[in-house]
Structures are given as C-alpha cells and as structure tokens.
Length: 104
Image 1: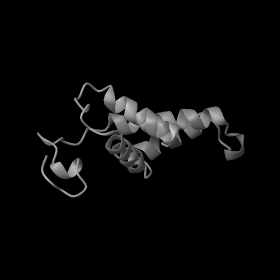
Image 2: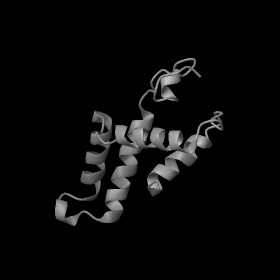
Image 3: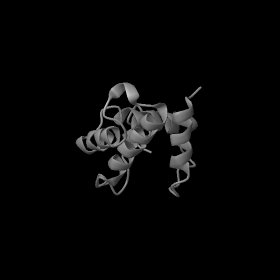
C-alpha cells in the first residue's frame, strides 16, 4: 500500500493531461516515489525559501510552530516549482517503463 503522499503524486500525474492510462499502477507508484525521493535533498532556492519563512515568523527555533513548518515546506516546494523545468525528451525511453529495458 502506498503512502498518502505517493497516492497524491500518482493522482496529480494522472491529472496532467498526459496519456498514462497504459501505465500499470505499480509503475505510476514507482515514478511517484522517485519524484518524492528527488525532493529529499532541497535545492539552494528551496533552502533559501525555508530560511526566509523561518526568520519571517520567528527569531528563535523554540517558537516555531507546526503551522509555520507547513508554511515553510510550502514555500520550499513553491521555490522548487519556480525553477526552470528540465528539458523533457521528445519520447520517453523504454527503460522508463520496463525494468528489463525491453522495447515497448
């Protein structure tokens, strides 16, 4: 069973308008997990956004609240989404879909 966040990412990928109807659920789940894992290490812009959020609300770490943590996380994700997207290949490679690398 996938986590709530993995399920959210799978749902978001399906809502993009791209035709991923032929992709099995386990492939979508693995792609979602990979996308989330890629966010584990924040970019410099994400760190800056989180830091700005922290110092905007509190000067002392012990005054930091859960709501402010959520605001900082949102600011960090917004910063990541504002960065220029990577160039997508014209056609995804078969290895993206098949673990054994066989052609589609």
